[in-house]
Length: 214
Image 1 (cartoon, rainbow, N blue to C red):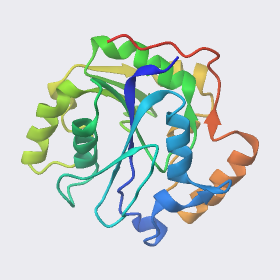
Image 2 (image 1 turned 90 degrees about the vertical axis):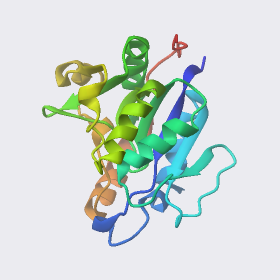
Image 3 (image 1 turned 120 degrees about the vertical axis):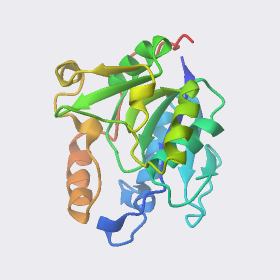
Image 4 (image 1 turned 120 degrees about the horizontal axis):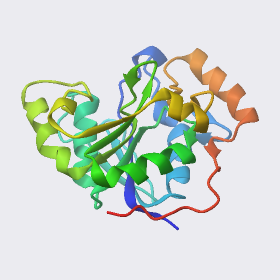
């Protein structure tokens, strides 16, 4: 069963530490990072949205591609643009450079989501806003932050109802915290290739997907 929610992938980062290489197009196991993300999220969500910048010129038959509504406003604009484009109230948001999705973590986030505006896991005491679930009702609060020139993904958290999941809870599901592994540098990419040789990029660890109630 598919979740009654959307999957949103932010793919428009600057890739500065990758020496300008578009992270969305980097290859692991014969597919780009972004193609892996789209394929995996389609197992969980009927609707997948990819948010990119205008220079990337991305096109996928199995995902809705939208551009940041304003350029050079950071990941917060990506979140805002993705939520605006989504056709569901509840949305799992991730980034193309986080290759090791954990379905059990996504399941947990979505089951808590109906009673909250944001459900976000913690890692090393800090929220992981690109492995989190957002309700579309947060859009006005994000817009307020953007109008103030703020770019940080968590800048609006103090104005909405946020449920945080402790690292201790997450470690029962994802002991290595690979859900939060980012490919930021060439070295990270090489490490991801080594990890993916032993662990599938899509950790298929929920036998029966349960529809998220809204």
